[in-house]
Length: 249
Length: 249
DNA sequence: CTCCTTTATGGTCAGGATGACTATAAAGGC
DNA sequence: GCCTTTATAGTCATCCTGACCATAAAGGAG
Image 1 (tube, chains in turn blue, orange, brown, cyan):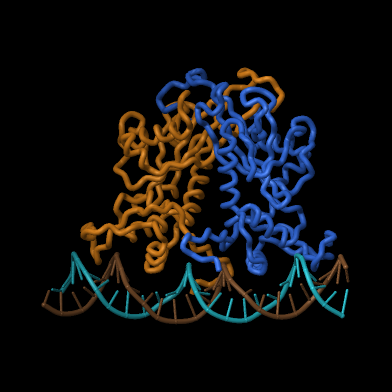
Image 2: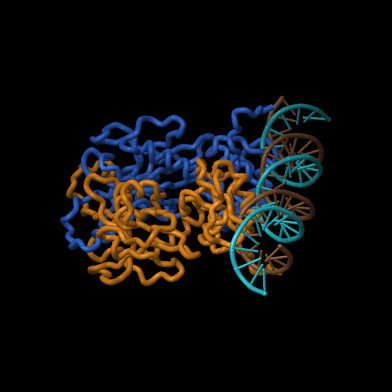
């Protein structure tokens, strides 16, 4: 923040950097975790897949830029996009990460509920959901960004109420459980999951009214909406991978 | 990372940003959490206290710049500084955070064991440890950065082995407990803390040899060093502040 | 040398949280 | 009326934790 103190300040004493934002937008679709990718139209990496993003405008902070890109790429209105979960992930600054020039990128992670295909105006026309298990080659260091974002999301499901960000405004506990199972890649015991969620104050709250009927078979489930809590005490820990010696029977 | 796709790329199409790193360097001294501050010599905020930091050099990534500044400001050698815990906190990009021009800063958090007064070469001459409970007015948004960094450290003590980064190479469990108590601002039960730490594989490992005798009264404690584990399973949760209604008797 | 204080270390015990599992309820399909 | 499917309600043993109590090993005061 200070030009290594004592040195005179000079705006031209340092190489100018371009500063961009990159977005790792996740959703749960068709039983799998998906990330929003766009196809690049120009070099470098023309034709390759990449994360949506763009330059920070002169009077914007990074978060505003990320929010703006999020609305553009998902095709949602500013108002709808404002309700989505968006958080800064970290900043990537390797000097060679962009072959054109020095570009520092502030990466953000966004979580969205199931949405229609991303066909918004303009830039969104070429955006596409891609299963994180089947990622193509990605431009720049975007594969690394996605890996970091995935791990962050996996970890935050444990000790925050973030899972509801993947759900529509009203959802069943079964749907919430599927979010956990999808993001963590494990199966959870239904009664235990239910007990834990209901015992966490402020995680979900019941919505009265008739249960949802989605043409489904089986007993219809009660609907819930996200509560006011943001953190989980105690945490909902993901089952740890069994050590090699243990049997599963 | 891509100039909002479709637009032609032009290095002059965007305002140049200065990109800096800021360091929140914490240590535990005299029973309190301290942060390293320097006194600014020039405007803006001439005479005010600020976090150490500086511009990222043309061929440096942010982490290298942070590591370089860390060595400079603590007065340690590059080799010694390389062993310190340093992690990216987050990036601050408010357009008005620096009155001179557009400056985006990547903040880092560093944890160091008790050190002699920071009297290194050059820049470190004016660096000083300050108790986080008695911070002066700070330049820029540095008060916010310190607050964010503190909360990050508090949280990471819960589920990582980070506390050992505040300790010298060999330490007693009592010293480790003091780190927790200092950072969290709570008192912990000694036998329970001991049981928990020793039951966490890879957190600490005993070092054989005679126990340390620091002219202390009381039974000398066994020495330990940091183990190889980085995460804590299950976590060591900080006692939650009692809800208002509860009695303490 | 003998108490006393101080710190480290080794225990117990009850309650809470969790994993594994069983049982019942409420829907649709045949 | 069955069977399947999903939701919901328990049970039970185990582990973890907080609140304790007890003992060991040092130095200091008398």
